[in-house]
Length: 189
Image 1 (tube, rainbow, N blue to C red):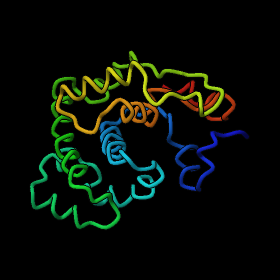
Image 2 (image 1 turned 90 degrees about the vertical axis):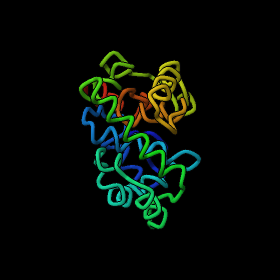
Image 3 (image 1 turned 90 degrees about the horizontal axis):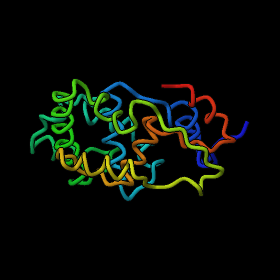
Image 4 (image 1 turned 45 degrees about the horizontal axis):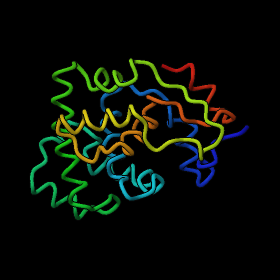
């Protein structure tokens, strides 16, 4: 079976590719987790963050958005000393502010899922890329999403991060066309 070439870099990347990447997510807890992880990735490789995912789950109270929104200065300092996560003060603080913005969106739209899926009219975009080199790092949709999220107070949500987020949560299917997952994911909603 053919697969996206990036998935072959490690067993953890293969596992992520085969089971998660591009699969539509409608669970607010997972949507929050990926929002934080994608922001933490800024300037780093996804494999670095993926390898720290378990530590992130433990450090950030399993991505309970209400708990993360309540983190105070003491908790932020505690996280800065936590091994296993990216100990960058700005990246830790953005998780707290994004949790607050996430809750505000949930209140307004009933769920973050309802809000984020409106960017693709509730249906995943199915691309047909021939190679990884064809896949863009931003699109008009990710530009719009970035602007909208920033207006709502989200941080670390530039267009490139938003596009990676879209790929991770299945708003877009960017598996190359000869990857076996491309056809499988097309039928998921």
